[in-house]
Image (cartoon, rainbow, N blue to C red; front, side, top):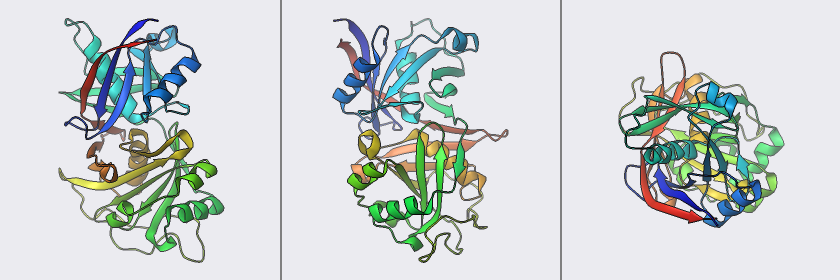
Length: 312
């Protein structure tokens, strides 16, 4: 048994126990894949990470550390709240004389992820994302599992930035909050589902009709207010039964790909705050912005809740 430095942090919140918890093993050296997966299953958190030295190739490209990310049931190539939480824990583990640069580089299975540091808040550069129209049968089955009517869905896209999400843009915040998914069905479909509502999306015909439940080409709806304010403007929920998490409190990867979709299609402003976790008694705050180059950044606060050692 080896004592390894360990932290449990809360991500996307400035107040402990209102965000998404993350277990971080700060020395994953010598652990097998099975040992990492077993520990992640034991923590029973949505994600557990293991910090390692970067590979030689990644170090040559500026990587400061490498992270492996596990849910209770599987390893992920990338995830947002583990990225910010692991960076926060890694920074706290450095020697007092270490001066953190304004931008850090994390290696993960997805590749190299840039992380900016602005005061105490961290933000990651959203990785490349591909999107496509979901198959009509899959979409119909997901809507049934969520208890949604076709007219409540304004848009649907398959979003892939490492994790793959079927993302749905819904008509009302109340629709998002009242969902009671059949997680058993979602698990059998093998699909993770993210739902969102954006305030002030102007009226337009819905994109999915009662007679044709597949996503169509997006219309001309635009975000009603061209300037973002410092209030929550987007409400998000994430259902991930296929990886052992019925509902994730606050999800960085989903918020990243949602932002890339919604901003690109004029459905959200280039800067906004998303709220997630309300139905779980959390108050996650995700700060989204797009810079002048078009890069989307996803940020949030992180607080340390447990600091110590883990034996294995």
